Image (cartoon, rainbow, N blue to C red; front, side, top):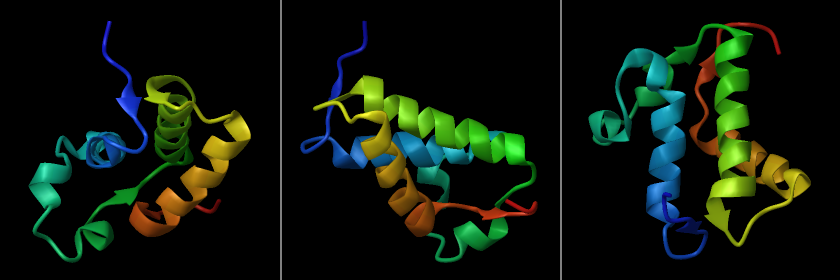
Length: 94
């Protein structure tokens, strides 16, 4: 069983996991884009399903894979901040 990440101590790892999940369809991860200033404009969510899969992954991670756990409502609020700061542009209407 994988050790749960700590919200306060493992912030960099948690963020990397979320960005890696976001870039999964491009077969790249955070380490591949770390030095790029405009990475978020080069890559996009092409479908609503891609975006929803990323959103679900992040919320699931926050409610089950991190201590202290977040409630679903807290995780959804945290996700909104993550999406605003690191989210890819969507090529579809939300």
